[in-house]
Structure formats: structure tokens, C-alpha cells
Image (cartoon, rainbow, N blue to C red; front, top):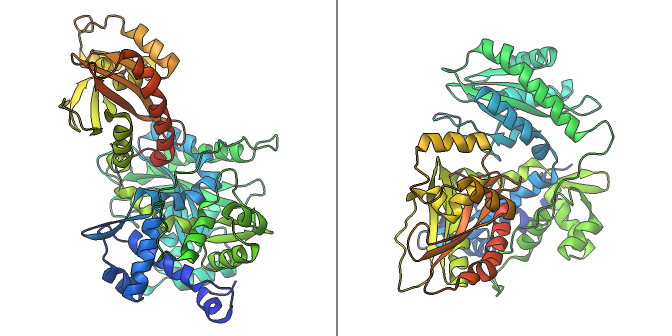
Length: 527
């Protein structure tokens, strides 16, 4: 396919303003700090007037917000990268097997894919370690520098590999002959090692994931700090486990029956744009990003007619935007259809490494508190304690003095009961022994019965159990894989709200808000 610059100059159907808009989005993605309009103009090489219009467009679409410091990305921008993650079956198929690897070895496991010259992390399960590589889903690195990259580069033809090796710059610290040798070695033995080459102190081993025709479509790896794991452990212990995980992932993707298991289709994220469309919004950026975010589990690949219908665009306009996105590398053609490439992960998904549960929760909690006229909180388990992560309160003459970080006995709170009810029996018993809590003294001698009821109904209501006068109802918060990562509650003073209102009027909005959180939480965020 011709290069983007060549198309921009020769093809009247190429949408140059879309390319500039995506360049602005990439500029925001590459910076942690807020950017002024002047900053954007300088980074992208456009006028201040154009930079302002692009920034306003991203704000209208819900992908950026403005403050006194300038513009910065919002969590809503992750919906763009989700287009690839949701349309590809690879992350969901690999995830449970990555979890098994982490449980078995206590080190971080990942799945990567190759796009052009880089490998992209499409799934990752981090071990609970103090020191680990600063890599998240969406991170991309030079393929020649990693074990997974050398596995994936091994799928290239001899001519393609030589073209790739010519790209390696002398100042990179990697000699093309050395990389070629490592790739050939990986082909021959079926696995590859990178010993502190990408990140000092980190060793990694990888194996291929092959389709039924034997083609390499992805790579699985385990990464560990060099002080914990030596090269012998990588080869003798980790490689067999990785190969088993790859085989099991392949069995999910391409079962012997010929029918892959159905994937649950998540509802799209709520449209965060403002009601009034500013006159300065750039339509080409709006349309191009609509096309990218239209792909999901139910629409992993679409032809022009489907894209046109899904984004409500004339077919001729859809063709222009699809051509532009394909030439820029964000879409790839599959017969008459198109699908997102890993490159879309660069459009804001780097924000994921900087987000916490609080960052995502705050606007939703504030909106729900105003709607219910109550205090709304999110909490997580810490042994047999509940730790408050975030909280928002509606105006009230009575204040509940609980702040983020506060710890209280979990069994005495609605959120804590929800989370305790979902623990495996052994984990609950371990937590109780560790806490050494006198449950009878707390008036909860029948805790097992209480938790069984909460588990059955899927929510909890407590009346003045933690503090006299305080009523609360809580529901679990799940990520898109169905895993419970936190709980959310609404609490009021008993003098302001009748008992029956807690389940009749508060529970349904809480459940609806929990559904909205599913895509926000993705694979879980740090509390």
C-alpha cells in the first residue's frame, strides 16, 4: 500500500485533516503533563488555530478535558484502543492461561503481537511484585529487543527479515547480525530469551502461539527480575509452562469442533460528549474516530457497507476514511472487510499505566451521589478490612467522616459483605484467622449465613451496623472479564431515608452504574 505521505499528495480521497487529528491525539498520548494549544501546535507542526480546533474536537468527543494547565486526555480515550482489544479474540483467549502462569511461577506473563516494526502487549497479567517492568497493555517496543519480538520476527520471510534488519540503527545498541542469529536460534529451538536487553535487570522467555496452519500469530512470555530467576530456570521450568499455555490458548481459539466459543459482547462505553456540538468541531476527526471505535466483539471486521451503516456515513465518505486509516496503519484489509490493527493502541492507551481506580471512578461517583442524594463510595478488601478507595457525597447537614484510605471491619459494611461473600471458602477462613476478629463480640456470629444470603442475591444491605444511624446498600464492581475488583455502595442517615427505599430506589441505580463501570475497569486498575 502506498505511504500515507504519498497518498496525501496524490489521492483526492485521502483525508489529510484526519491524519493531523490523529497526530494531535498521539501527541497527547505521549505526554503525561497537560498541553497548551501552543504546545500542541509546536509538537504536531500546525497552526495554533488548527491546534485549538483539534483539541476542542477531542474534548467534545470525551477524549480530552481542559483545565487552567491546558488539555489532557481523559479515561474515555481508552475506548479507541479497546477497538483492537475487543475485536481480536487473542487477549480474551490468552488471559486465563496467563493467570495460571502467574499463579504457577509468581512472575508476570504477557501476550504480544507484531505490527510493522514493533511488538504490542495485547494481554498482560502482572505478578504481585515490588519491582517489575513498567509495561502495560498497549505498550509497544522495538521487536528486535525482546524475546517475543524475536519469536514473531521468525515468522517473516527471508527477504522481509532482511528488510527489517536494515531498519536497526547503529546507535540502538543492537547489531543486525546478533539479532539475526537470535531469531534463527529461536526458530530452531521453538523459544527465545532476552537477558536484560530491553530493560536492565529483567530476563524474559517467550514461545510462539500458532494457528492450525502452523503460522505464528502471537507470542507468550514470562518476564522476571534477574536476581530472582536465572537462565536455567527460564529454559527448564518456564518454557514447558509457556508451551502448555500456548497450546491451551490455541485450543480455545481453534477448537477441534471447528466452532470457537462465543464471546460476550460488552455494551459500548457511554457517549461522554456534551449535548451542544461546538461549531469548531472538526468533522473528519469525529468520523474517523467513530469508525475506529465501531469495532468490537460483535463486529471484529466490517466491510464498507457495514461501517457506513454503523457510523451513519454515506458509503463514499466511509470509503475515504477507511482508505486513510488503512494507509496510516490503523486498519488492515481482510478480503473485502477491514479490521483494527495494534497501532490503534497508541491512540491514548498509554494513559492506562497512569490511571488508578480513583481516576476512573470519581466522575461516576459524583454523578451518582447527586442523583441519589446520598454518599457513594468504592472500596476494596484488605484482609478482613474494607479500605475506602474513593467517595462522593451529596450536600447534607449530616456528614459521614470517612475519607479515602479509611479502613473499617469489612463484615460490618455493605461493601465488605459483598466482597467477603465472593471469596473462596479457604481464602475467607485464612483472612479471618489472620485478622483474629471476635465476630461474636461484633454481633456477627452468623457471618457465614449472612454472606451466603449476600452471595445468592448479589448485593448487601446493612442497617446501622457500622455506625448508629447509617444505612447502606452495595453491589460488586466487575471488569470486562467478569472478575470482581471492588464494591460500590450508597449510604444515607436513617432519619432521611426509609428502610424500604434502600432496595427499592437505591439498588437499581447502583446496579446500572456498576454496568457502566465494566468497560472503565477493563482488566482491573490499581486501587
